[in-house]
Image 1: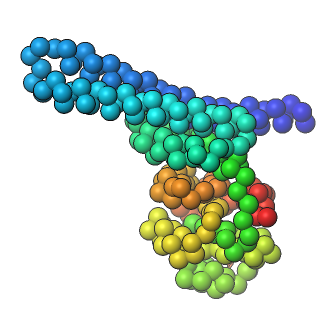
Image 2 (image 1 turned 90 degrees about the vertical axis):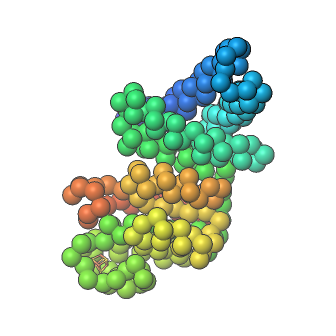
Image 3 (image 1 turned 30 degrees about the vertical axis):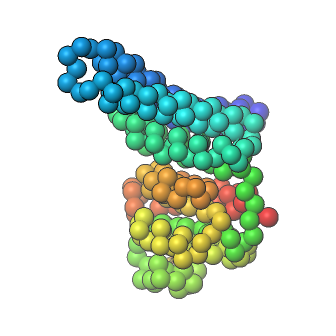
Length: 259
Ligand code: SF4
């Protein structure tokens, strides 16, 4: 049992390390760009005027410094399991700005997007945990993807999840039991646009979202600074089709955020 637990802990650490390592690489890349510009500004036949290049160099160096502080704040928050409110903005901006560079470096180094996105979700969830967010049930929103519904079910649950007859052919029935027992508003969405609309309509203080790696990571970044706890779906029949979710993980996510 102890061996199994240590394996789980190691696996989670490795997952976070992938994204954090790539974040650091992105910072070094920015640093390299700043030094390249510094060399370029000394070149006597530079096409651009020296002041423009100097401005660019200083901006890149300042951004690098800012994101370095953001990365340190992220690592410290994960290690100490608490965040400092004044540093949240800088952590969010670091993730938002460096995320595309991280994906690009991942592509160049043959690390799959899915692995990076999983690692990002793990980092994000740890940051949400370390914020110690606790809300009443009405201030939490549970967002579910449409692909959790059995594909032969004819009930339209995207308009109103209560249209589900709880027949048990898919997990929507069990998820409804979990969320209604806690009084958490629950919405099934077919994509990012509807998810954003649901967040706008309900104005929650925090969100638990179930989705695949790609949708979760873009949803987390789109919703910044709203804290979104991500629960990855399972795809035994392939993507976007009769997907499933670990109900225990979902229950833990809801209980983590509720007072
Ligand atoms: S549990 Fe609900 S959503 Fe799932 S198949 Fe039955 S009626 Fe449809």
